Image 1 (tube, rainbow, N blue to C red):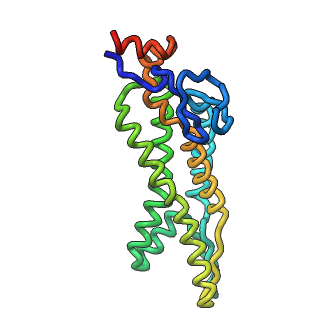
Image 2: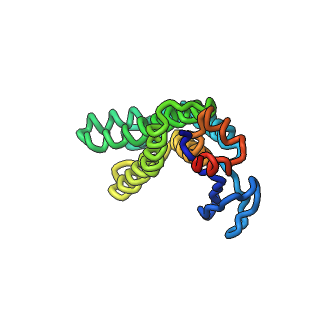
Image 3: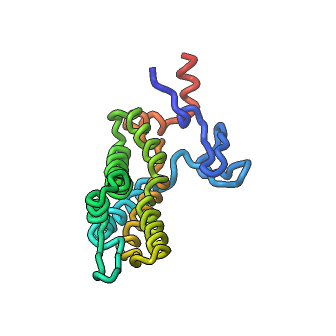
Length: 220
């Protein structure tokens, strides 16, 4: 027995307002908000890949260029993300070092690799571990909101140090690259249609037929 899907049942949901319509034509306007209806986001894979490639390119300078510049009477110190983590660890701020390492290095890397995996499998219409892939996308949506923590820490330190008058901390050019990585991965996540996870080759072949055939099959 074939598992029924929304597309096989002739259901289309509006990407803007979430209203579900039955037997609506592809590209027809939503009766509630006027947005054109599509079974899947148009050119989802292409736009996702474009953002992911750009994010991977910006990931290199984000980790190589300084994100924090400390100027004092002893001179200037340029810290990248990892050198900043080492600095906080050596200074005894183990919790802060761990938070910055996870939020600024591991999380962006995890998001990039996960989105690449999801995009590759969706492009191949693979049915490998579909429930787990759907949960992975949900996890990406949850942890994505913490990706700008490194920028917040640098801005907070800059304000605190200037108030105390010991030194001057400014953001380096690496912050711009890191912020670009965060924005690009967010756009890639938004561009990716998670429903593509369930479009295996067998389902795609079935959905090329009339979607209302599903109701006939269920009554047979």
